[in-house]
Amino acid sequence: MKKLSIGLLITLIISCGLIHSEVCETNALRETEQDLLLRSEELQEQIRTVSQNISESRVELDQKKDEKKQVLEAHEIWQKRTEEIRSLLSD
Amino acid sequence: MAEKNRRNTQPAFRLIVTALCVMLIGAGSFYLDQNKKQETLRAHIAQLQSENASLSDSLDQDSETLASLKAEIEELDHAEEKLERAKAEYYETCAQLEEAVVSGNSPHKIAYLTFDDGPYEKTTGKYLDVLKEYDVLATFFQLGKTSDSLDALYHRAYDEGHTIANHTYSHRIRNGIYTSVDAFINDVKKNREFIEDKLGFTTDILRFPGGSSTARSLKDPIVRQLRELGYGYVDWNSATGDGLELLSPQEYRDNVLRKTGNRKLLVVLMHDYSQNTLIALPEIIEGLRAQGYTLLPLFYESSVIQK
Image 1 (tube, each protein chain N blue to C red):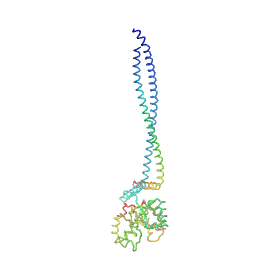
Image 2 (cartoon, each protein chain N blue to C red; image 1 turned 90 degrees about the vertical axis):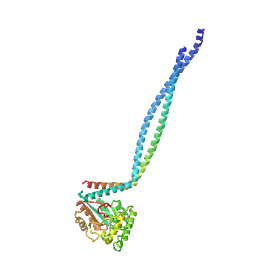
Image 3 (tube, rainbow over the protein chains, first blue to last red; image 1 turned 120 degrees about the horizontal axis):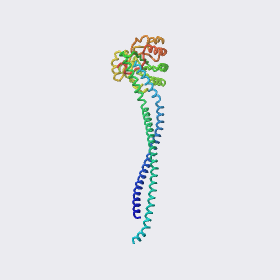
Image 4 (cartoon, chains in turn red, orange; image 1 turned 60 degrees about the horizontal axis):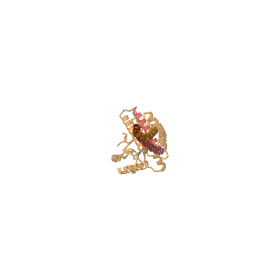
């Protein structure tokens, strides 16, 4: 009976070691999970900010395109004229 | 005695063994529970990693979109500079073509249509309409004139790509600009400032009212001063004659088309006040093109501009 008790005690001690290790592993996994959750929130926040910036930039771009419509058209016309002269040069 | 001792300790050991067994069962159960939690956590972590990777990709794409939009906005901020560069590139290409024509490396010929003394309220707009219809860029040697409708014509000619050049402010040939070098130069400066105020650019091409020979002995000192002001000047080697006498549109047309002399570079003098030149202009354009001429606006680097 005494030997059995000693055997059981040793098994119990080993089990405690294993359980300690498992608890540590579980805690580490929980930390990783928390880190990932935080990262996920950060990424979502960044995406929200960038999306908002994209919307604002699109509005700004449309306004600018409207403002500079004549300049852009003139630019295209001058480029076309240059191409026409270039085609004469290659004759 | 030993038997008695064993009998006394046996229940205690049984209790210990039972307790140890219970504890071991508890430990096993706790171990299994931890394993289950770890599995759940691992699955959640894998899911989060996958979601974060997807979020990260999405953020990268959005950032690229934003960067491209910002670049487009920045490009638009510099649209005017880009337009100026496009114009400069056009004139550089014209200069290359002219060089090829003059050196005989191109079968083409170039005609520069020039209109003096404008703008005119009644006619300049119609000239611009014809030039637009025929897709021709010309050169307007303009004077200093003020009125709202003339302002619009200065702007229209410039905005449609024609070269705006200096023809002095007053064009006063008699008892005016040719009385002294200073009188001439001051009139040129006045018109330069006038055009700068109106159109926001500095002219660098000039035509003497009546042509450079009208300046007689003042020509050389005037040219020296013009050079210092950054001006080149140009006369002409072809004209409708509309500044000299009233002829029919057909005669104005023939004056140009029958007297080209197959020159490689033609500078045609016309006046945008003439109704008959206006009538002749489409045929002049078509006729010059039929003779192989490419119609271009004047530019400072052109060899016909004397510097």
